[in-house]
Amino acid sequence: MNQTNEIINIFYESINPDINYQNVTTRQATNEMIKRYTYQGTFKMATRVVKAQKASNARIANGEDNDFCPTAITPYEMRAKLPKFKAYFDKIDGEKKKKAHKMPEWKPPKIPTEADREEGRKKLEALRLKFNINK
Image (cartoon, rainbow, N blue to C red):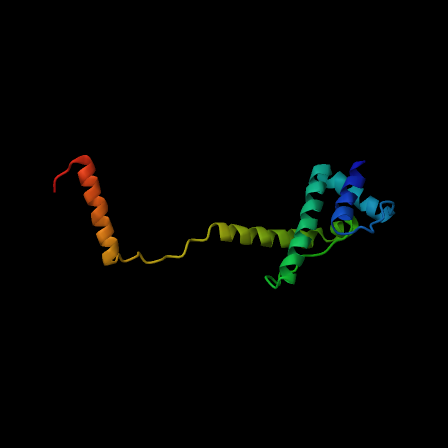
């Protein structure tokens, strides 16, 4: 399978089983992206676009999120909406960074109860006996 067909196949297998491999516009758009962004870059881009659409649709269906991902069911549509996808990915990546660097919520220290103190005394006494330490 040639590179153009491999990129088109990403859409075929994931979101558009009716895609026409022989469509001139689709093939031309795919070839232009391969020339401009390389095969690896185009492959990664197409894979990320398809995954993002599926994830966004799942979150919206579950009522978890109203954040709308741009849609593209062909390489031609992906090429036409690249600026929208870039803005969407920048936003998503920024949110991930914020979550990764979020400070944990402060919780006050637990105030020991009398039972906790008694347990601590027993452990301390066991250690004193074990190591033969006098008070």
